[in-house]
Amino acid sequence: MILDYGSGNLRSAERAVERAGADVAVTADPHAAVEADGLVVPGVGAFSACAEGLRSVQGDRIVGKRLAGGRPVLGICVGMQILFDRGVEHGVETEGTGEWPGTVERLHADILPHMGWNTVRAPGGSRLFDGIDPDERFYFVHSYAVREWTLRSELGSAQPLVTWARHGEDFVAAVENGALSATQFHPEKSGDAGAQLLRNWLGTL
Image (tube, rainbow, N blue to C red; front, side, top):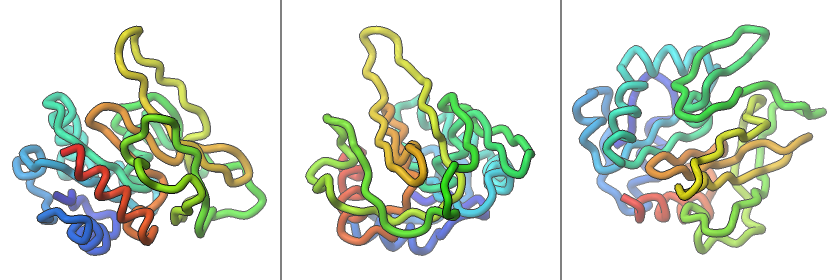
């Protein structure tokens, strides 16, 4: 299921997940979104607009309910960013959903936006990047990112798996944390590597 909250390339996300082997629908209905086997939360544009749009369809509650029940969620681009505590753009701070601690802020880089293909550094044990060559490139388009990862799970529980990329400085490119996964890049625009990542995510449903 693709969550429609007024932001994101819904059709390209829908087609990409379909090609990866899933039956897909686009919905803004809270009940359908909570009950789906898997939920994709896309997002493009400003953090503040995406956060407002998400709340307008109860998207923050939908994500919370799904995670409480162990039901997988995949955030993409700004759909990943709004899962963090806050975003800061042009001096304006906006609350995210707070699923992860951290701040989305402007990258320190000579050229922005970071637009185009880039490699990532995935950790061992990653399910999202299973079977994907470490030299594969993924498609990014963003000027803001999470530059620090601060969450540490309690002793004995599984640690989140954090994938990094670099543009001017290191930033979080993907996270796998139980039922909640997310990518800063666009898997639906990332060719064969992105298709494999989506198949890997579908395999966790």
